[in-house]
Length: 102
Image (cartoon, rainbow, N blue to C red; front, top):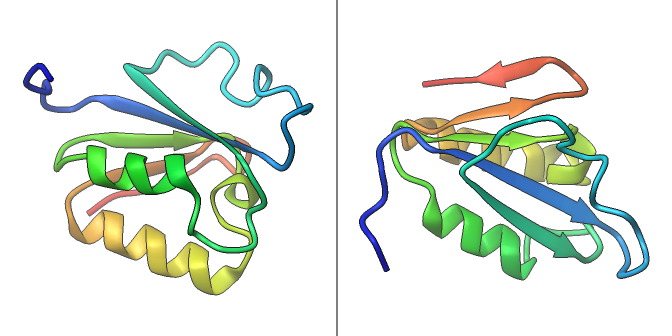
């Protein structure tokens, strides 16, 4: 695997089922890498979500269409955003127009 460049934009997309379209979520947003889960958001135990968390590094920015695509419960949302920010990773929610940084 090649060495990662610092400061990548990493997209995360989640849809609840295989039939749902992922195209609209980050349409028109340029990202270096995208992780797509086709799974319920009932918890954070989603394969691509976990892969994305392991992939991102300090200086990166995670871009998600909306908070409900990232986490379904407020507790999970706060916990996961807090963990990323503490690692020096920004997280941007497009629909809500909110970005959390260290």
